[in-house]
Amino acid sequence: MNSALILLSFLFGLLTQVYALPVKVGIKRFSDELTDRDQMNAMDQILLVNSKLRQPRGMALREGDIASSYIRSAISCPGNACLWPKSIDGFVYVPYILSPLYDDMDRITIESGMQDISSATCVKFIQRTVEGSFLDIQPRYGCWSFLGQTGGSQTLSLQTPGCMWSGVAAHELMHALGFVHEQSRSDRDHFVSIIWKNIMPDQLHNFRKQLTNNLNSPYDYGSVMHYGRYAFSEDGGPTIIPKPDPYIPIGQRDGPSLLDLHKINVLYNCGR
Ligand SMILES: [Zn+2]
Image (cartoon, rainbow, N blue to C red; front, side):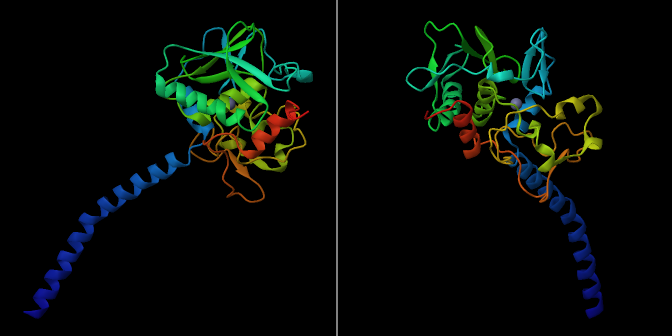
């Protein structure tokens, strides 16, 4: 009798384990997805949105989100020629217009991206009145910007809702101020390894180093301008690994880091 009971409870135990297994796996997968989403940085979000687009007409997107017309093909700002001019009062005013297609929440998100830059630098985003050069911020397809001031009206696209994070807005605004991605720095090979074999073959060009002015600033793994660890991955393997410590988190989505703000201050000579 006793042994029959033991056998029965053993069988019952096995049965519950078998039934419990898929549930456990399911929960784990769900929480993994949550963690992955949680770790998405601004650039991951931008690439996610932009990967679903065709290239905007007459333009190319370099490094995933830096727009260049076919005429202005160089992804550089030689001699700081693309910087916004500094006013006599020491501020750098960047006029902008926001498309009427944005709703109140969109405007708040974009303007808080501006505020995150303005509150700690001499760059002030102001609503355009008569200025000839200005940002025309529109919910086009994708999240992208030209590099630096191009002169005249320049589009900066923040699609809604995909690009509606203040960190994404700050990222595109930093491109408009003249910054490229952090891992494009000329000295990046001292700080990250690019895992070329994991990159989609047609996207290798997005990992070229640029002749950057590094503004005497340390490499910033926490820059809002940093690609994520899996950017342009072919098969899900990492494409960027920090060194010597491979576990340093890279990029984030909250907004400009302290070093990002410092670099804006140096590039625009704030306080001088
Ligand atoms: Zn970018």
